[in-house]
Image (tube, rainbow, N blue to C red; front, side, top):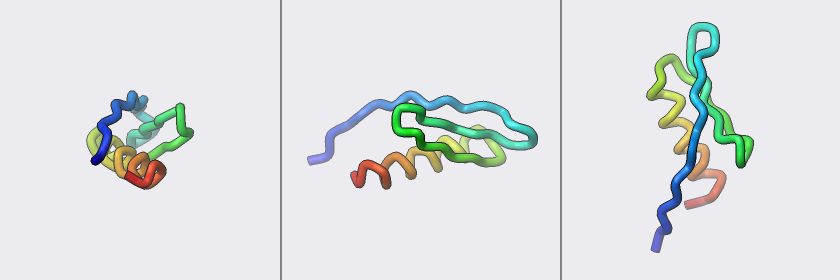
Length: 51
């Protein structure tokens, strides 16, 4: 059974795109819109935790 966990991400504008960061695990992502790095960050966290 999967356990739900809640994470807080930082999303900042950087030059012509956006960067998202989950500082507790030192995982980051980037994208052209706010939504893109958010989705990529979720995927990176899942891969890191092997959910």
